[in-house]
Image 1 (cartoon, rainbow, N blue to C red):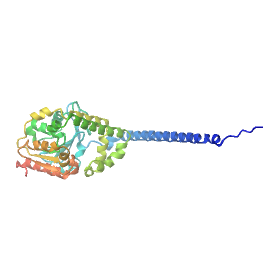
Image 2 (cartoon, rainbow, N blue to C red):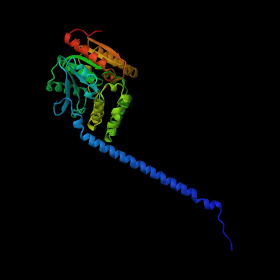
Image 3 (cartoon, one colour):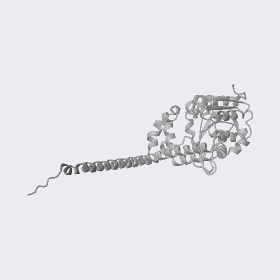
Image 4 (cartoon, helix red, strand yellow):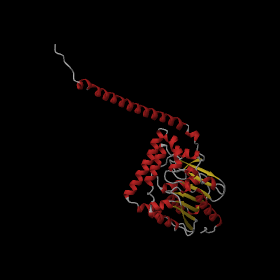
Length: 351
């Protein structure tokens, strides 16, 4: 009887295949587990955000009043007593809480009002385009109908420099002084190439949409506010409550869309600005960021042009980034105080 003997290779061959199959099975299980974990975390985050957002109205009530400016209401928060009234206007996509390290200090010496442009903070969305001229028109109605008597010292940041200059040109008797905090001038737009503008716009859209996406899953509440001191220099000068409120409010869909609309309309009023009248001898302090000047060489020239709009002006270069009112609030407060004093006494600004 013939005996058939199997070779060692024939007997061993199924084992590597079985090991490979087990490896594939475990890899698939791990991947499915990770997907399930991500879905579970996303669902939990979305549920957490929905529950928290439902209570935001009670947790973060508007500190001021809502004033109708023609079909939509803007939030206006005034504190302190005295004249002239300081009016604070934040930069692109920002709102009244950004002045949290400045407004309380100003309130010790005069009345000071911070407000939210349409669609930002606690204000309702407004009509398009969201241009500096539209902002100036709405601000005039807001102050008039909100019962804020002039004259005003306008203290503004970044893109709102355009709003302040338009407002002062069109309502010169209402403006007693101006403080421009690293404000944008229309000449900057002329120096920037279309490619650079497109890059700037794309960065703004990515940032705003990232914040909007993170907010859907509760990540803004959990991560953004605690990370602020590391993300934006100087934000540690704001209270933890203010940082949290900014993080929550700026992540809402309407806030994101309003910020993007402001970015699209930021150059729409350049023609009106070029035709605007000079400021005469209105007290004017221009605060320029050293870091912005280093990053954009033509920024210093733009700051000098704005300084030249008044015969009673001076320029200060702050050793900080663009958000000078975050990083060096004392400098901004001091500058506002000097303009207020000059407006009260009629004396020229100190050199």
